[in-house]
Amino acid sequence: MFFSSYNTSQTYDEKVIASWSEVVNQYQRRADLVPNLVNTVKGYTNHEKEVLTDVTNARARVGSIQVNIDQLSDPQVIKQFQEAQQQLSSALSRLIAVSENYPDLKASTLYSDLMTQLEGTENRITVARGRYIATIQEYNSYIRRFPGVLVAKLMGYTPKAQFTVANEQAISVAPTVSFDK
Image (cartoon, rainbow, N blue to C red; front, side, top):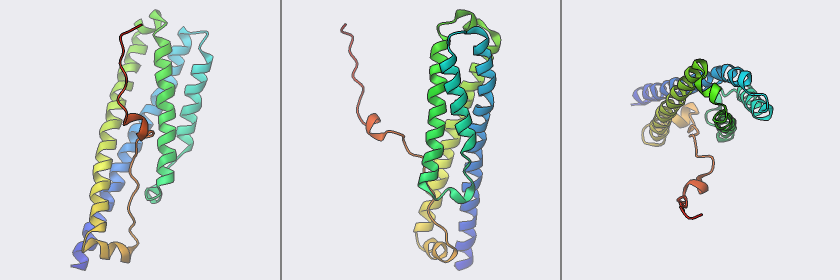
């Protein structure tokens, strides 16, 4: 029973590592698209330096926060990683909003291709995060149930931190829609 539980724990731990690697891989893909997008927008806009600087700074922060496998049990590290990614998402949203004011930019094939790649990458991030969440749930459940809990305590396995919603309070309230002016 011990060896079976140990092997199962190892299998789940490896799944967690693989799932996390995929999440990081997709976030890296997005970070790699950002310089091309910024340079493309920069070529069409002259007055949006603040937005371009925000995107560049957010990308730099994302690159400075590295989470290794040993840190997956630390909710604070995961939170910092998630906050950096959210800042980049917000900066990209502002960049996209600004680009709406430049018809020539929107008509650019390069810009259109980059936006398509970015949209696809955002979808891949969502899928990778979903898989990671499911894998963490499976791992955490196993090391808390008998007999896995015995092996987990002996081997020092601890629960892994989940992704969380940045502002759970804000999403619990339905938005107000009003057509009155």
